Amino acid sequence: DAKTTQPPSMDCAEGRAANLPCNHSTISGNEYVYWYRQIHSQGPQYIIHGLKNNETNEMASLIITEDRKSSTLILPHATLRDTAVYYCIVRVEGYSTLTFGKGTMLLVSP
Amino acid sequence: GAVVSQHPSRVICKSGTSVKIECRSLDFQATTMFWYRQFPKKSLMLMATSNEGSKATYEQGVEKDKFLINHASLTLSTLTVTSAHPEDSSFYICSARSLRLAGKADTQYFGPGTRLTVL
Image (cartoon, rainbow over all chains, first blue to last red; front, side, top):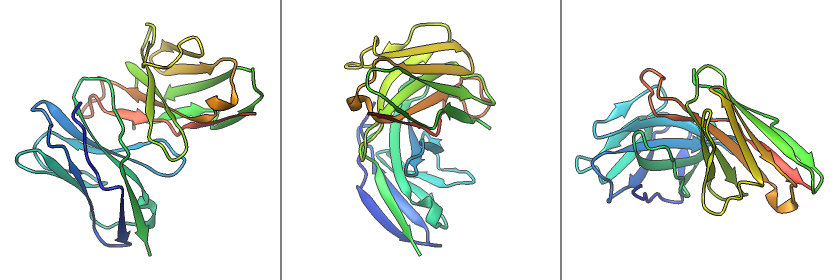
């Protein structure tokens, strides 16, 4: 799997949008971008994934650049409960392993 | 939908004993299950992958005789830590994947984790 680069930490004010970047400059054409988050002492939670089109669901939006070398996860109205480590992972769909990097620790403050 | 449970959530045991952790997919059939381990302030590390009815595939450096994995049905996998030692103390997390979930094929869903402390 291609590797990803994320900032180690970010801060966000409650109610504001949180924009979490991820660089994946060596991504291959058949690799998807997945986002998970892990709240302290819990298992990771699936957020969203995409190949090249922007995606939106009830949790977040995923914006993938046209060259697919980077992406941004957007939490439109961050709450205190969104404080967690966010992982950006690229993998080929159908390939079993999710490999976790260090992720971004997002701290949402009042 | 796509809920994965683990039991127990927390276990404390004496050194030398064995501990079994259960992982269940509650509302879908998991064709593949994964076991991860996470040490404090570290990321998740994959230990092994198991497909229903077949032997687990272990990652390099993970002792298969120490971490016994059984995936006997499409909704249940177990991890047994045999002859546990203090260095086995960790957060163990299972994950399940199904190719049959409509609209969410190939997505992995994670359990809440089991905190193991070996005294």
